[in-house]
Picture 1 (tube, rainbow, N blue to C red):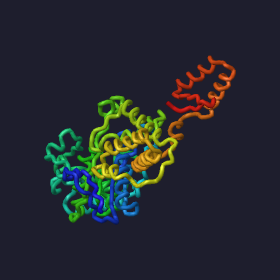
Picture 2: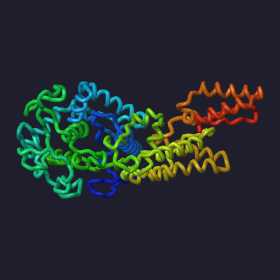
Picture 3: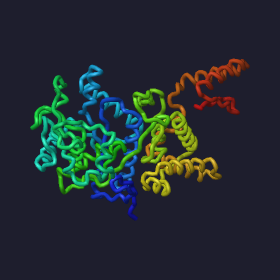
Picture 4: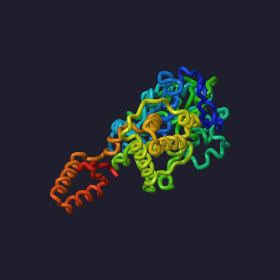
Length: 459
């Protein structure tokens, strides 16, 4: 029976059955980071959401049939400004932030995309598309800039489903008296005086650099062609970025539909407020790593809410994710888990527009089943279901021992445990209690066994 994957399409504003244009060549493009600042937890939500989508599509069509492209934006005004502020070169900044982004994705358990193109390596493709747009009267040259003529694009407002005036309310638009329409956006901009040479490129319109929107159109075209299946990104990209991508790509290639399914993940707030540097609540993934919060905890937190809904980061949410993973790992402890097929109810939850809250509940039910099972066979079956489901969504890639003892100095603890055992032999109860309390303060629980030994675990 053909598996039906229902996916919400922003373009149609409905859940649709995912039907790729070619089942042997499924194409997926996701907007990656602009590498000027260490990625924050909002960026990481996008990374995890589309990693899960990639896993589901691979499960349905096979790994060889899926091409996942996620770009790196390494040419942008923000990059120029931050490099100048830090007193480093453009390359030094972009290389450092790109490496940090890759570390973040590994920390969160994300698979590598098939291709990760950099914008600076595809300037020739951008120039070629801009030339096509000029030739077709969808773009024009003014004051050494090349602008896209928004009014020339059919169905420009289709993705956002708003009228033109509403779309531009509260949105910063670069104004110029030379533009035909205030809404027109830049495809190519000239170099500024005293600007870094390696952030500007030769073009038919002089030395300069591309606008943001043309970059993704060029890279998706280069690796996926005029038409592809999925385009993903944060909800904040619906307008202007994705709206402008559609307009310029369809105008450059009139027979193109560009992306068939548009998928957008919701916003992430911090303690109920929008994350921003000015509010002092800007949290990077590196901050979480430095706090020794395990990547699986952050990944589960990011999957705990439906991907299209807003998600609030707070200490309790992280604590809840940690407790849930502790519960799952405790459930499979000392059980010989077997490799089994993905349970039907679990897979169906993900096939329904990636319903991760339901998927997490199903894993919880299997964990509960372990603890109430009356036979070893039932316990083994439930434990095997836990690890199979969790692995599929990128979780539980450690043994219970590794999980409960991560970040722990085992030699130090074992030394104290042995010291306490010796104190008990000497009937030095005061010292034995002091050691127990010392370890308890470090969240290490001691359990004295009937045979006189002591085992320990993290709280």
